[in-house]
Image (tube, rainbow over all chains, first blue to last red; front, side, top):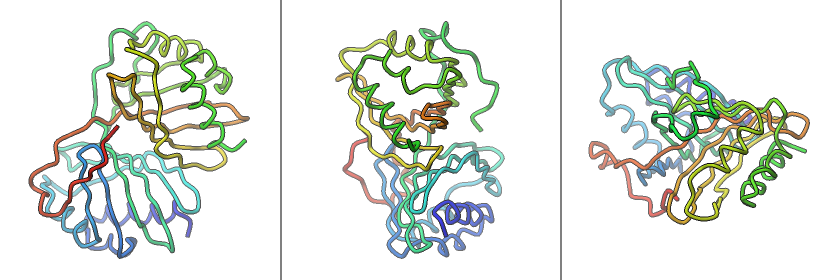
Amino acid sequence: MRAIEVVQAFWRCMASNDFASVETVLSPNFVLEWPQSRERIRGPARFVQMNQEYPAHGPWRFTLNRLVGNDCEAVSDVSVTDGVQVGRAVSFFTVAADRIDCIVEFWPEPFAAPTNRAHLVEAMHEAIE
Amino acid sequence: MRAIEVVQAFWRCMASNDFASVETVLSPNFVLEWPQSRERIRGPARFVQMNQEYPAHGPWRFTLNRLVGNDCEAVSDVSVTDGVQVGRAVSFFTVAADRIDCIVEFWPEPFAAPTNRAHLVEAMHEAIE
């Protein structure tokens, strides 16, 4: 499988909310890094547990806004919500032998449009989530 | 050229701090979107002007942390600093005929590691910038 197909399978597993199923697409040496908080999770089991324990108001829904990749790498832009909490994840995947070895993931937050460039921009009506 | 080569050329032009030079890799219909602030910039001229006018303490330096792509799309992870301000840009590029048609760009900010998953993570020593 190409990396983008493995990543599509990853997000299908996440969307099932059966987070144990995600292990089927993770390498035994799987590592996830969040550079913004300088956190790293090692191993599929901890990743599954983190998702199972994450405080949620309901089932998580994932919207795959975009997926770019080649044979061994892919990047997804995904909107996430549990009906109350909303977020947007940009995730860099490294894939080998149909398994995800590594994710480097960013969680950009909304910010106010700077006034000093207002003369150069227009408003987008698309919501972040 | 493949998309990643065009994006490499884009970041070389940015690194020159001669922002007018960036026009050489932009399509006449170039559009940049920042979903976090719901801002959109239309046209190479406004993009050049925005970069020229952006308040800076010195020349901008750009570090290309990662570049993933295929023939027509690419995603870069770039650290940016003027020696005082620091930032990290994750940018989705759409390329056609050796020119960049569209950038959708995210600026993730540092956040504190959540305490409720501390038992599952380790600290990364890599800085965000």
